Amino acid sequence: MIRTGYLRWEIDVADERSPVDPRAREVTFRARPSYRVVRVKSTGHLDAAEQFTQGEATYDTVLRAMRRDGEETDVVIPDVGPRPFRYSESDRVETPRFWMIKIQREANAFAHEVVRAAAGFPQMVISSPALRAGYARLVEWEIFRVIEGRSTPQPTREDEPMRLDAGAYQSGVPELVAAELVRDVVDAKEFDEFCRFDCVTVLNGGKYFRIPRRPHGLIEVWDARTQRPEARLCVVFQDPGMPPSDEVVMKYLLAKHQPDLLWQVGIKFSPPAGKFESTPPRRWRRGD
Image 1 (cartoon, rainbow, N blue to C red):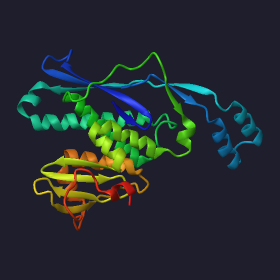
Image 2: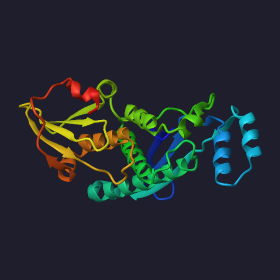
Image 3: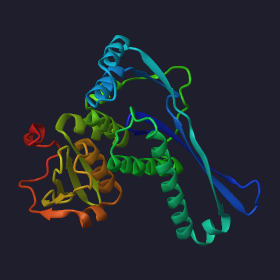
Image 4: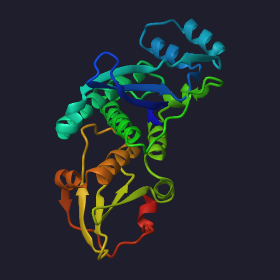
């Protein structure tokens, strides 16, 4: 399961022999919502108030919307796909690198298709192009986790709806949505560290990468063998308004899967003082 905003998706990937070409195989991508129906609590008074301030509605519209406030609307989320991709079986055997490039290209295209479908429900997806591009990378990452057998899609819940208070979304909770995304991406121990110390520590390639939950926070890099500091890395994304927890997710995926790229793109500063501590020091808890 992976999130794009409030929406949760189960990713299915099937690799079967093509029914029309005996020498070819077909990979089929499909994204199913974890809940078929999302029950959204009405926030009509907020929309009416915004229209009133812009001169697009009368105050009577606001009053009527306030009387109706509290109603719930059921939104049905359709599947995305199936999206088939046919390839020659000889490509996988004889030119595996070329075959993997094609698979990655198709997975990336399908991931953006999922995010475009999710963006059709603006009350459930944050309206930021940078974040939506980040969601596409996460969906692509989940696709390959399913292919490798490290993630198992669950059945779509048809029996009960997922409840969403759109008013909470309207009042500005992107960081809470992003924090739930952290829960979906990291493991239980790492999420516990995130909750208690506002950071996530990743061990990869003989180095510890400690990622803080702060806007443009510096990543501390430590040598895992000597537990000595090596550097602090500054990695800045294109969207300056990205919620801090979304920054944690992006940096976590780089540290986990592409540490060399993280080391290459990061601007290096002097290393932190002291020796590495498995429990983050008190200054992490203050968030300064």
